[in-house]
Image (cartoon, rainbow, N blue to C red):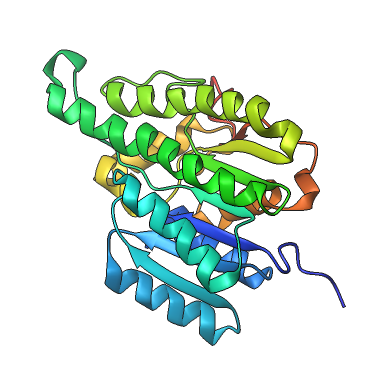
Length: 256
């Protein structure tokens, strides 16, 4: 019998109501993890928990906003109270923020995007890491983006700044807590067929253009991104930390 990659592990997944977060929560549970799923939409989370439990897994849901530090605390408390501790976190929740020319971005919209994409991720890690230290180590994972890291895209200033700032955050956390057994990494997905992507790409012409940006000449599905998150969560990546892992179909290197 093959040992599951996350057997006896406890994980938190934010942004779990759809897209990459949902696909990853399902995969984590399939691989043996007990999962705390989080997002703003309660009904979608309840549906996800039912799906996980129907497949024989264990999960609990909590709806809230990652901008709220009390929510970050509550997620860790649920993981600890319900499942005994915390081993893995996937800080995946995010927002596109204001799109358009930078000079037209309102300060309030800029601040909100950074609050969600960067400060929300920081608050998650701030409270997840102490719980992992009690278990002797763990894996903290973030969803960043190639946007702002390997590519500049017009009209994405707030999104790019927040996601690029996350790379600095993971490197700092990795060196601060590496000696205590905490690994910290980020995935950087390419174009992926998610509800957020459809907010940005509202026509078949736009999707065709984006597919052409990739070396593979296609976009991904959430189910294709999730295994890379599983790799960073599992012991298979035991010597990997401080890494911005491109899972981008070659969009970062393509010039054709």
